[in-house]
Length: 234
Image (tube, rainbow, N blue to C red; front, side, top):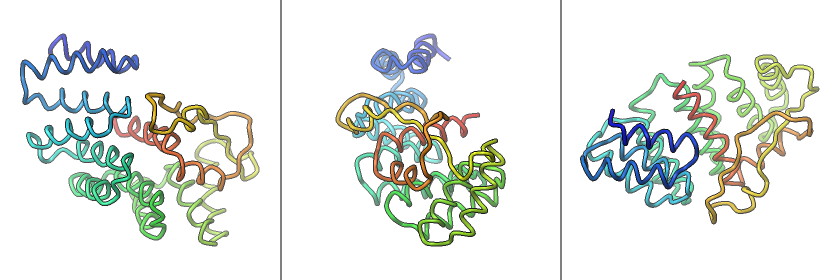
């Protein structure tokens, strides 16, 4: 690993995305076929909400590395942020084909399908994700939210109870606590502001309010996706 590439990753981790882009661009100037350079520069451009530029980097990387599930996932996410529904779902499908035993692939696709109001399809993906990882509280919660949405109250409550037990929230009386960066949500995709990750606090919010926020604001969606990407890399 070159020093410049390492510096770029350090800049990325510190949220210095322009500096990181400069480093990765230098790496690519020296080696245009550097897949990791394209991948990380694409991540930087995504963070800056330069989605079309990010897609171009992922396109170039996929021309070199055609069987990389993460590249398809990242490109699909950028396509989703541009409201390119068909292209986004195609990329999530390809990521899943390449990585079929990873529950994250099903759960992340389910999240996007739910955002497109493809409720039954999203439920099927969440069920498959839980078959692969039965103790995932986020997936249990999100599937419960969809069951609640279509009127399956008993099934929803059972999943909420499981999620609360796994996450240590079983004493919260059927509530979860959620905090988002509201200023980032209002700015949506028109600025370089990025939403903070979801955190637990003491402001009570119903599960339906949470799912409504997640499905209608891009900034909140990105915060959840950031959480999932950290799980994938763990």
